[in-house]
Image (cartoon, rainbow, N blue to C red):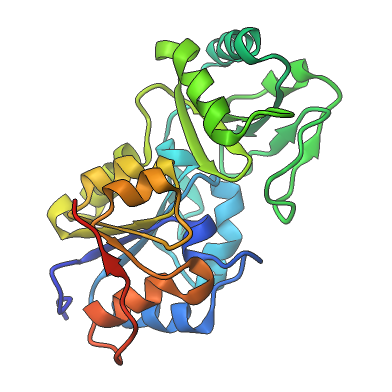
Length: 280
């Protein structure tokens, strides 16, 4: 059955968007995603998390479809448990970019996500995981981060804010990598030119769907390319101001089922409190 709205592709970020702060999905969100699927629309996770950190959530949802992972660097097929497409970050370029940023702002703490469906998250001494529930392996020295192909580098600074660190990184990295800010304590380097929009476009092509039929939900600046690509972008109430500034609509927070509020409205659900619209 065709979806009863203009949107046949529902693209959602995870952290700060679809998931609550404790990394769980509410019963209300589960119910509305089931309604979306029953209406013939596709739900697509588009996240900065690498495929191995997304697999358990997709299993919990019973999803056997696609997911865009690693800020767009990976297209993961949950049913086959394989990467249909992946782009790695050249490790020499990553080291060079890291050195340039440290020359600008001083000592950084770094981590990497390894490529592959079983890739590890490695963290160097001093790096604190922004999501303590996600598994990580601590290595003894920075050189140990580069032993296997990686999809991205995660950065933290002892005193600078995320906005300050991301801004400084962009001024010196140039074409070595793409700099993104995807959550509290999460500034990242990924392959140059790779964004959530490139991954979403690739996934949509696999599904035979278009940008004009896509609504996207997010909370951080790394979601801006996805909003630019999709027909409509909805920011959470807890979203970063940069994302709210380009959103078509602001819904409730992730803790208050903001995605469910919008999807219930679009997919003929019961009356729900709506977010405040913003000009494009």
